[in-house]
Image (cartoon, rainbow, N blue to C red; front, side, top):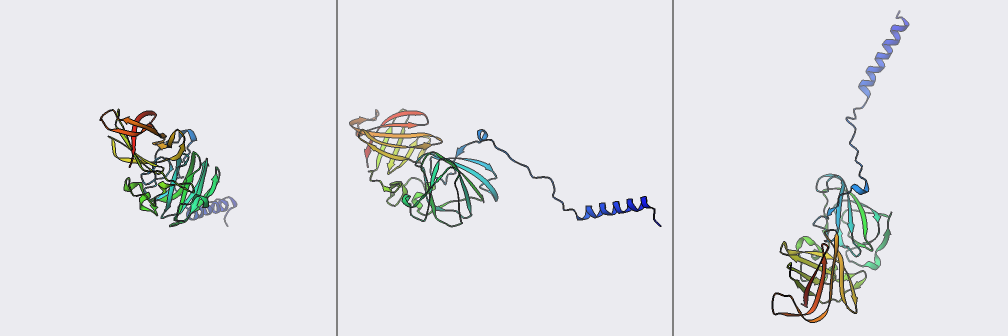
Length: 275
């Protein structure tokens, strides 16, 4: 006969041994990550995105397998032309207002306005476009590797600046088709150049000779035309007005249009001519 104390000890040991065998092994607890809004580090958006936006990676790595969280910040008028993704995209509007449109044609009248706090998701291969109605921030959750394919190859900034943009989103602003004659602008001290096509301005300088396309908002006034956007997270603005005899200060050539450019916090003067 087993004594009560010894029986209790035996049962306890048996339960403990069963617990050790049956209990699942979860390993070390996963690392948690917290990022305060003031600690978010912004940088240039991926090169596959139209110029003018900034991005911040909050979790993971979009270039590798696995989940990631990315925030995209764009100025008013910033547009991502019709495109698709190979994996589901889950998006939350953090601030501002953006419009989401479905389909392979950019038609702002068919896009739905989504103010801060709104949510949308897209399935792989679904063509859609996004328009920023004001300075806005959106958060993208998906799984990598992340990529984007534009319906119209002319909208892909990775292909470089193109002169033939008859079907490009550069000629569309909202539901309006812009009838803006292409121009070439130049300036000195320091040297810079800009090619204006619709609402797209391709800005170049000695350090960036190929040029960077800036998506802007075009406005026409009595005293001239203005293209406003953002480059590298800073305000970008190009203003033109008629002034026959404008000179670039380096040659005897005379231009019919004067230009004032705001880029990276500096104002520069120049001249322009239609193409």
